[in-house]
Amino acid sequence: MSTMNYILPVALLLSGAVNATTENPWYAGARLGGAHYSDLSSSQLDSNQLEKDDWAGGVFLGYNIKPWLAIKTGYTYLGEAEFNTVGSVEQQGIDLVGKFTWRAADSLDIFAKAGGFYYFADGDDLLSDYDDRGVVATAGLGLEYYFTKSISTRLEYQFYNNIELKDADIDAHWDTHFYLICAKCSI
Image (cartoon, rainbow, N blue to C red):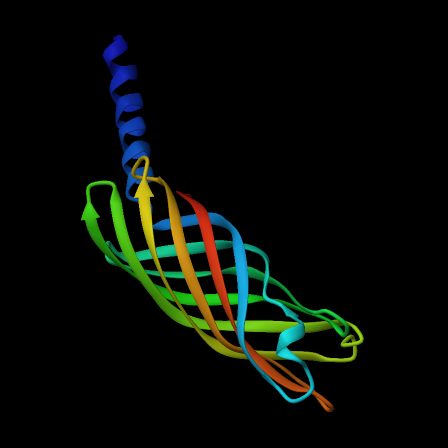
């Protein structure tokens, strides 16, 4: 057998693998940034005692349905809303959002996203008897820069509306703002 009989099948196999990776609709990533808490509404908790900032982060998995439309899910940790003399409320949950993209330049996208967030709000210290679960609306905006077709980074803002801590003796809710940088790659 000639060497061409070996080279041609290997070349076809490699070209198919390269083509599959550049057209893979699945992606995954991690994000890290800060959370800011605002618009506290509560008769039991004092908004003047609220530490308004903490760190936040998460991981995600997405699927590109169209070049301009993706669906994304993931785990997000939104930090602890701390009340100086009372305790804190840890916030985390699962996002499910649609991502709408506009190609601004060859390597730069502008995007918006909207969906829902299933959250867990768990109290600590004097608030340790209080937990809540629920679904709230979330929306975001951002810029995404592509280093290659399968590796990118994002600057993003995401808003979580009315996360609650509603239990027998307490009824509080607030908004959480998530400012982040994110790394993403095709899988």
